[in-house]
Each structure stands twice: as structure tokens, then as C-alpha cells.
Image (cartoon, rainbow, N blue to C red; front, side, top):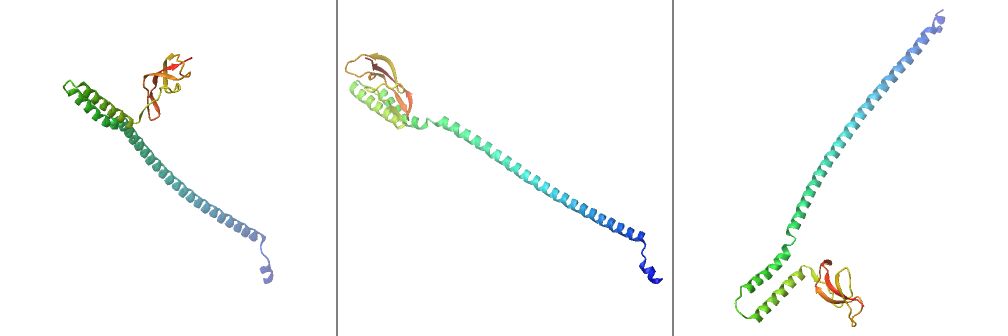
Length: 192
């Protein structure tokens, strides 16, 4: 009988134990999942905080860049304004001695017309040289082929000794400033 007691296990107790084990396993699994979800939430919060910090850093970088750009724009505008305001400073500086010589010539008294004419010629040469130093160049026109880019034909002539389309007279000289036509030459052109 004592052996029978040991051998007999109530079926109901075994089923209850199995259910308890399953319940405990399910509970542990649920606790593990809850812990995993908590870890995931912590990781998500950390990632969100890092993203927020990165966004703030980018925003601050953007604001600094915008401020630097605004300062650059103001500086360039000021420099451009100064360039326009003082662009003629060099040429005016070169023309001041010419102005002084004109004043001296006008202040001279006396009837020596030849000396006066020679003085005017020297002042003219000084003025011409100052303008050439600034980049002014006379457009060659006489006996050149007519070029509408640099010549302005205001009349025609019919000369037998000149080719058709050749400039025969220069009525007003033309000038270029560093390859840009400032004033075209006013010319007469041969037309047969």
C-alpha cells in the first residue's frame, strides 16, 4: 500500500502544476516583453533627444550662416557704393595738373600769341596723355574700311581715287575706353 501511494499521482494535481508552469512562463514572458518595450522606449527617447540636439545644432548653424551672409551682403554693397563713388578718383587726380596749367595759361598777360599757342599745345598733349593712361584710345578712321561698330557715317562722297566703303573724312574723332566704344567716329564714306 505504501508503494501504491507513491505511485499514484492525482491527475488533477499534475494538470494544475502544468498550468501553473505555463502561467509562470507566460508571466515571465510578459515581464520580459514589458522590460524589452521599456528598453525600446528608453532607446527611442534617447534617439529622439539626440535628433532634437542635432536639429538644434543645425538650426543654430543655419542662423549663424544666415547672419554671416547678411553681413557679407552689407559689406559688398558698401564696397560697391565706395567703388562707384570714388571710381573717377584716379583720372581726376591725373587731370588736376592739366587744370592747373590751363589756369596758368589763362592768367598770363602779354601779346606773345606764339608762346600762348605753344603752351596750349603742351597742355593738350598733357591732357591727351592723362586720358590715354586712363585707358582712352582714339578710334582710327581715316582711310580705314567703314565699320558700323566704331564709325557713324553721316555723309557719303564719290571719290574716284578711293575704294568703295572707305572713310574719306573724319568729322569728329571717336574714342574707346578699354575696348568699349565711348563715342563712334563721325565720318564721311566713299560710295561709288
